[in-house]
Amino acid sequence: MRVLGIESSCDETAAAVVEDGKRLLSNVVASSMDLHAQYGGVVPEIAARSHIESITPVVEQALTDADCSWNEIDAIAVTYGAGLGGCLLVGVMTARTLAITKDKPLYAINHVEGHVYANFLTETTLPNYTLPPQAPSFPLLALIVSGGHSQLVLFRNHFDYTLLGQTHDDAIGEAFDKVAKILGLPYPGGPSLSKAAERGNDKSFQFPKAQLDGEYDYSFSGPKTAVLRAVQRLCDKSYDFPSFKLAELLNDSQKADVAASFQRVAVETIVDKTVKAFQEFSPASVVIGGGVAANTELRKQLSDRLPIRVHYTDPKLCTDNGAMIATLGCFTASHKRPFADPYSLDIAPHLSM
Image (cartoon, rainbow, N blue to C red; front, side, top):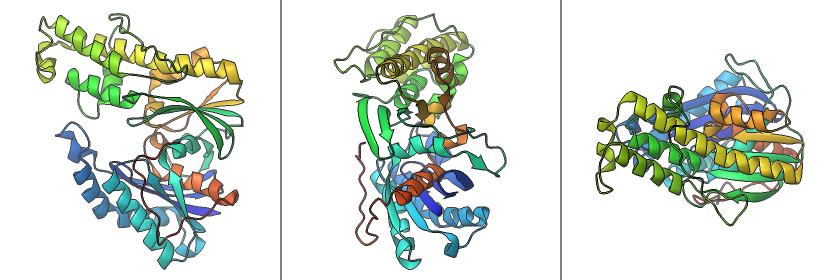
């Protein structure tokens, strides 16, 4: 079975072809990141316009790279939520149109769930990909961490899962971005903060960990504010001093120490919960997915503190991509899940697991 996956939930226009839920045949991503850099974050209207320009050539390139025709595509899978409304609309309308004109089954895919399924890809002939040697086994504990999501989910089997906990405010990736902005680090903030942290002392600042009633829930708003207050004190400025002016008062060493200290606490927060869930539920596998899954400190802490090997995929498949959508589409089809109606499928920007 070959499934074409289409992803357009944020600033990446992506399409990929996956075979049998495990073999990556193509993966094409057109990012509009450069267009957003001057604004320090994604501008939804700009992202949506970029999707309109890119979606058709990206889909065509995915088919070309996979060396297959439309006759060899068995189904189409598309992200219908969660994400930015205008961005989702471009991908969904494209998939609906293709499903009708090419007479293909259409599957509506949850973007967050898709991040987990990137870990089921184990084979490819594409260059410069390092995939896990085998797919994870059930029961499976999944940590999904990105700019928009921080969730801990227990999968008993395909499509049988329980959401154990999630963030109450900022996702960890969003918190990384906001702290990076305070420090004046380049956009995108998450990778820039992690790079700066490599040069810093992660014990320089003792930022707090949020304490919540839900044993598997997260909060990063408090630690993020603690960073702002610490930097204001470091610069000898009052609380009403504009945060965007602080960076110019810091030297590189100070920025590195703040970045390292915040990264350590933020990662410890989610690793603590993951370890606790592992001890309670004894899963056969642990996987991490989402853009922050590429963070080396997160991978290190999980590997150090868990007694089993942690599943994570190639960094190129951690960020938003069509391959994860196509992979979940394969399993959706093989488990005979319902088709989506190509004449009525709507977007769900606030979709949850």
